[in-house]
Length: 111
Length: 147
Image 1 (cartoon, chains in turn yellow, orange):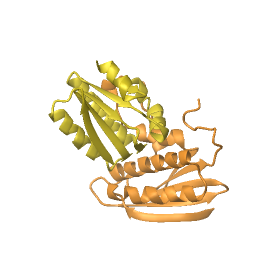
Image 2 (tube, one colour):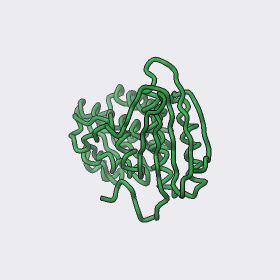
Image 3 (cartoon, chains in turn brown, green):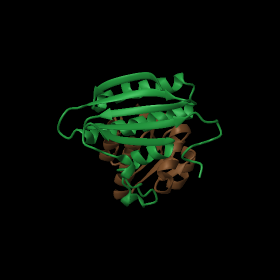
Image 4 (cartoon, rainbow over the protein chains, first blue to last red):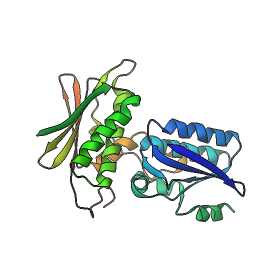
């Protein structure tokens, strides 16, 4: 798994590539912890390059959303596709997370 | 019943990738679709994580995984000698709860039940024997999503 962070107009976007599973989820948690420590409030997670996610990966995403919410911020999930989209659908995560098709759509919600 | 491949490893997360890859290669070799292979990888991971986390509290133990073919159906069998656990008795998680109340516990098992055609469990001679069964299906059928 690879996480690439970019910041534009004060909004941090993390692009996650590869597989988010029971082994790699802790890497995501560490990276997200760094963003929280840096005081990020609104974070976009772009999953267009994510090929696979399991319940362990969802746990990390949920934890990230809860941490941001507790700090008055929000987590936005964008560009779900294929197997990852299916897992989000199955889990009912669409109803608890802010999911958008594109980064632009998420940015509109923030501003 | 034809044995396609088998692997035996310590029940530890560091072997997850290797075991999932073996099962995935089996499914690919049998001509399963990319979507079905993703389902199979997910179900395999969820079962293995469960075994690694709960079967052998505080002690080491092994997990054995076999892929078999039974009249066109792929059977993935998991054997461990840990604590008895029949996942079919587990209630489904609440997938409509609000974010603060959302729990991940039980979600992995829920995926397995949704994505596989059949899940069979037996406790035999102090072993847990769990079998996941998946049929090849047509491209249009999306298990778990179709209501």
